[in-house]
Length: 307
Ligand code: ADP
Ligand code: MG
Ligand code: MG
Image (tube, rainbow, N blue to C red; front, side, top):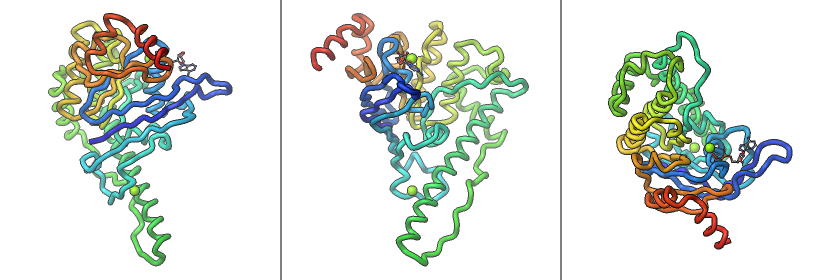
């Protein structure tokens, strides 16, 4: 089981005199849990997602983001692991390394590329993650080994091999995986014959985001407003996909949403309200219903009185 731990996170816009946006965010999301992150526009929800991803527009000024893994999260790794391979400070890592470790942040769509099918694009994404992942842990093993050698001069080890380029997923194997994931998400196979991005509606892009998360099998997926602009049928499809990620793959979900509507279909274990760059209140699924009925003002008043 993996846990994403966000402690006292402070972040500002990364420019001279940049505005402070996050003012002490505390949040913990474990595999298999669905957390809804709600809050009014401008409260810092998307910034939280982007800072988790390592977006260069923001500078973290305090706090930490840690991903804690256990045995089952690293059973694909070829090199010998040590204790430090189970606890990672994401703030020290590049965005692609964070993704390789098991954080999924809604795919940014590349510009339309003629002749690149979605299947090829997705297969490349899986292979890129695989390579980055092996490399990440191999680099760690190199560091551990160097430390061991310092302690025990004369201790002979063979140098680490570079990242293994076997273990990549081939075309046929990918097709099988894709079919299985599309069944899991109850998706139409025709979808995949489309060219990348060409002619995808807004709703199809959101479904595709869930499919990407299913294929990459992240420990934790951060989904920012995946419900915006969806009609009711598509909202249900996307929601069922999110439930399947959790139920069938054990993915932990941080579901960022402005509206309560999607939470009729994706039942969160925990609901958090963000106000002015912090979590002002947390509760169970019933909190989302209260917010729908009464808005955010009472949370603001409560937080103000407590301060
Ligand atoms: P939410 O997703 O909750 O609507 P955001 O995290 O997008 O809120 O934004 C929080 C606040 O930070 C807003 O006032 C927004 O204008 C500001 N902000 C976010 N990113 C930047 C940026 N790169 N440059 C300047 N201001 C920003
Ligand atoms: Mg936002
Ligand atoms: Mg190590």
